[in-house]
Image (cartoon, rainbow, N blue to C red; front, side, top):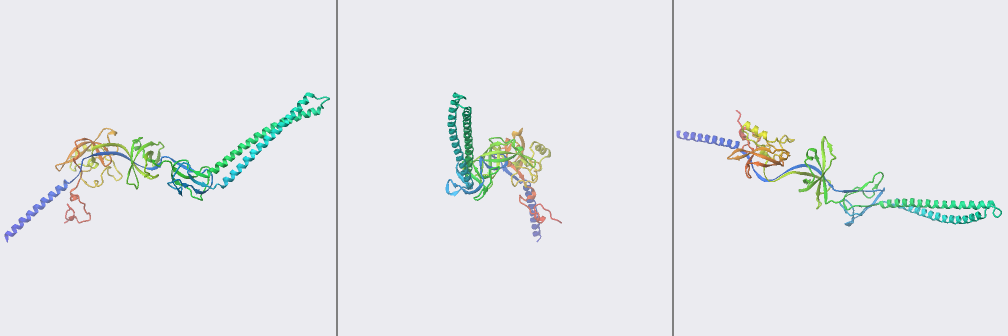
Length: 469
């Protein structure tokens, strides 16, 4: 019996020693549980994000120059069984719509009648002029004979004066006939102008396309009355060439200085799982201010051969400001991590040489990969986040420190930093090699191997807790 108790005490002591060793090993393992990533080689692109709207390169607003009721639409040039409508492809000269022309036909008939009357008046004036010329010739002959005879015994003075008056009257009538012809000719010109106006108004009742393109918008219906007063009402909007489009991108003044003509642009469109390419065109100088923010409109030229892009959709554009191909790159989280027990002087010196982290609206730093912000809570107080634009182009090369995991312990490696895409940063110099295991975070001892804890569970059930009492 005594031997049994001795054996039991020995077993309990051994179990306590094993439990203590296991707990110490567990704590040590938890303290040194690092989150790591591999140094990769690839491309890093520094992008300037902005939002814009897809627009046709050139569009024509087709209006009406006369007032009236829309009576019909023209046939679809590619399918005569249909009428022109939204997205109809039309040719130059295609019939788009017709306006009720009854009033304008009456005006044309009236103008034709007035023109015919003016031409008849001209013929009457010309006939009268011929009559006046004949009378003038007769009066001239009588007057010449009277002058040869002279006033005297053979020719009475009254007769002499009568021949002279008749001659003067005939001359005046000729001048009057010439004036009547001039007046008739002017009346014809006026009538012709009125006739041309009436004919043109009648032609305006037929709305045709002046360009080849696609109907983007139809703004009237059959039976609708259009009124043309000071400005022509818009009936159709036609995009001339939908195989080429533009994005009108609003860029703030801070980023506009980094954008230039010919810069490559990548963009996506909401609802389409596809990335498109474009090229920066003009930067318009007519800036706008909204809530004290100055923005400029940048034109991005886009090819649309398959017609996948349609006007007025929102485009999420990214201007390619800088690019480094086939370089070493590391996650930005590795630039923010430091050992939690590092020497204060060393950490201060390292932090002073590293660029400050770019703050975000949530109070964190930009460029953190998803899922790293909440891990490694200890030892990440002084970070080396990378701001967009922190590269060699903005001045001297930026320095930073990355910790490599060697034999289970972190080792500081100074590096020169290149551009960043807010997820990865290019490494332009240092002792890093492709495939090196770098530290991006560290699990705390309370994480129980990186797992999550339930704050509502009893303390004894949570790792590292202390039993009350």
